[in-house]
Length: 80
Image (tube, rainbow, N blue to C red):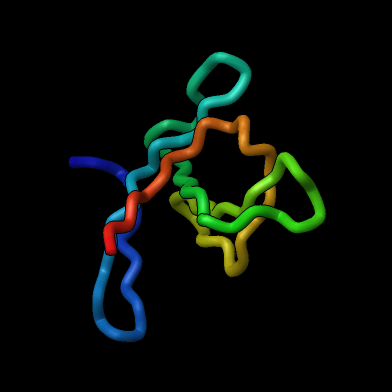
C-alpha cells in the first residue's frame, strides 16, 4: 500500500525506496508521487550541494542530480 519503487541490483539484491516526496519551503511536495534519496557524496563543485537519485511514477533518473543539502530528502542508513 506504500507508493514507491523497488530497485534490483545486478547481484539480485533489491531495496524499496518510498515515494516520500521532498520537504522544501516549509512544506511537503510530491509525496506519494516522487521519490528522492540522498547519496553519501558531496558535490565537489559546491560546498552546500550533495548528490541524490530521483524518480517518479513515469521515470527513473539514469544519473544522480545535485542540489542544496537543505532540501528535506530521505536518507537511507547503511550499517557495516
